[in-house]
Amino acid sequence: MSLYYVQKFLFEINRDPAVQERYRADRHAAIASFELTDEEAAALTKPDIGKLFHLGVNGQILMHFAAFHQIEWADYLQQMRDGIDAYGPVREGVYAITGYEGTEAHTERLMQEGSD
Amino acid sequence: MPLVYAGVCSHAPGITGRAHLAQRSQRDGVHTAFEQMRLDIEATKPDAIMMIAAEHFANFFMNNMPSFAVGMADFYDGPIEDPEWLKIDRFRAPGNRDLSLRLITEMMNSVDVAYAEEWLFDHGIAVPLSFLTPKWDLPVIPVNINCQGPPLTPLHRAWAFGDAIRRAADSVPERLALVGTGGISHWPATPDSGKINEDWDRDFLDRWCRNDKDALLDYDDLTVYADAGQGGFEIRTFVAVSAAALGATGRVRFYEPVPIFAVGCTVADYQLAEVPS
Ligand SMILES: [Fe+2]
Image (cartoon, rainbow over all chains, first blue to last red; front, side):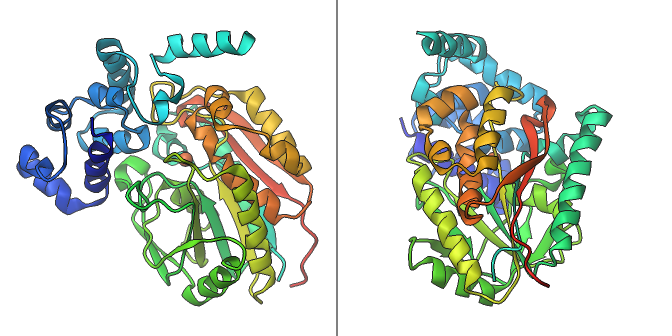
């Protein structure tokens, strides 16, 4: 896994109109110089917002990539939920530090742990 | 000169970007609170406003992540986000390179800060400034504390940084207003967006208003994450303002949870000794 490079690409496309142009012209070429697994490359080019969240991409980076793809706010939130349902808890990154398995399950578990 | 203003406020992008989705009374309440904050700051006749934000991978990334960064330029552009998305038009905010240089030089005596001669403002600075300096006519000194990419800046270092800011402000003749932005509990840009832990927020604000150093530093990241979400890591900016205000007592001017904005919208300030104009 190379969450760092997934996020690096997203960081660059979020802030650089030239990278956005390259991605619009040829998605695979735009990500070619980043060290990515096939799974990561597929998630970035499809794009699969739910998979990217599951892989551990920070929402502060992901929400702009969703907006770039004209995904409305409520749909963006839903696609992340669907990603957790389809692929399982967040694997890596800041949300994985307490194990992120989805809104209700996560809250429930943290509250249970808190009351132990 | 001693700081002429020290306060904190929210910076969530929904405050401007999703204003049209909020109930009118809630939106107006938040916007009125920012308006009051603008009037309070203007009354102190600042020469510059220092904005301590927790930026969100706009300028600083994990390839080279500073614990602390301070801008040192004569202008700053923004917003880095799509203006349509943030509902803030593109702007160029004035800076003051010479003032930044003197402040940073003093800060470096006690804290290792990175400086940046380029800085694109993201919502962490642009949202509050769109209310506080709507004409983009007051020089800005942007400041960042790493609240996003672990390992994060330790809270006690955020306190030391606030101490350094106060000493730096004292060392220059300019009148400096200080504003920390972010927090408090929230789960921004995640499936939990809209969740707000009001009890946790109010307890934190109580510690902040008492300027209780021990209580403010008595948090660990795992507990903060569980209770207040990853957005809770942004308390670092509030903690730095507490240190900078050196024991002053604070007051909450506004607090209201607004789920569509994804935060408990907050405005609070410290009652500083009057600085003659
Ligand atoms: Fe933030």
